[in-house]
Amino acid sequence: MIPTAVPARFLPAFLLLALPLAARALCTSDQVPAPAAVLERFISADCATCWQDPATARPAGPDTVVLDWVVPGRQGEDAPLATVASSDALERLAVLRRQAPERSDAVSARREGKGLPLRLAQGAAFNDYVGASIELRVPGRTAWQPWLLLVEQLPAGTEGSPVARNLVRNVFRPDWGQPSTKPPARLADTRAMQIHEGARPERLRLVAVLQDARGRIRAISRTECRE
Image 1 (tube, rainbow, N blue to C red):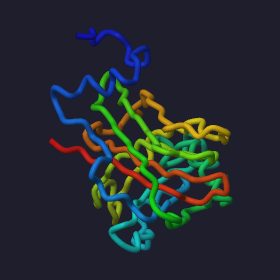
Image 2 (cartoon, rainbow, N blue to C red):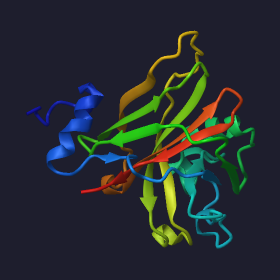
Image 3 (cartoon, helix red, strand yellow):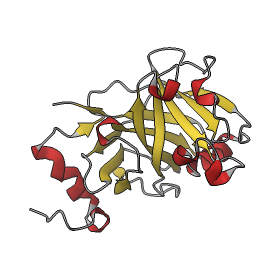
Image 4 (cartoon, helix red, strand yellow):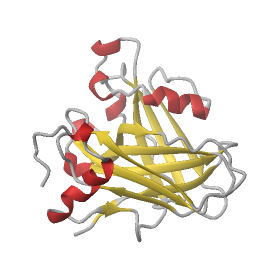
């Protein structure tokens, strides 16, 4: 057994995936219906009331996965939602070619083509980290832009929110950007992702959005935890 005194950041990520098996089944995307669309909601950390806005955008259907980003505001650490703001939200907005909102914004997109076999797996929390893996089978020669997101599932009513949310807590972007002359059998990465203060580990899940070199969404995947 690995002593709990060993900081999780020094552990190989595959061990973080293996550690929770005795207590809980691994959370994976296996046999989880792949979403066909994604709705990304952005809230400025400066906007105290946006989280509770009754006009918050809703998904068009059950095949849409929702992502909630809190964008750093002009007030910095003094912003009302600063504790859950993420600089990764600014990078995501840049990829989507959107400006940081003064209040809130929403962007939706559908997967193009047949969904690709994008597999995710996550372990349970250990010393404020969670093991996470992403794997794309038969990737071909294309340069890929994967976004692996650690989200916290928040039920409607949390802090007055009128809707359930998948609050983005951490982001990992594997380097799959170099096209290959010899197609690999798979592309895969395993990482330990930090759980930020305030997040409840039992509510954490993984969501991945895979874009090709032209920015088209080619796969969306998410994990579920099953006993």
